[in-house]
Length: 113
Image 1: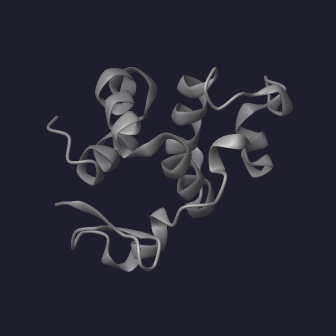
Image 2 (image 1 turned 90 degrees about the horizontal axis):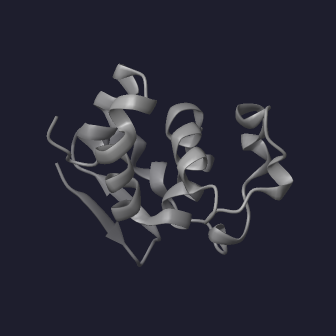
């Protein structure tokens, strides 16, 4: 399964497995400059207004992969890119994601278990 980007329509597509979710990875403009407020419920112990996508990447990636909706996941992939997210899942996924989430992201990102 391959993740491919089509620049003419700004969409990412994930093989046949997620055809019905083809708009799942639509990028946002200027995504790396803010953390969406809609993610606030998943960071109740933090002051989300002070979050930095660079400095707080580990926590932001973890919570968004686990709890994020389609719009938040779009933001995540635009802000961090597939490569960084794939590396995060490889390095930290086993410790930080519930097994069903880990399995899903390993399939989507083509990571061998």
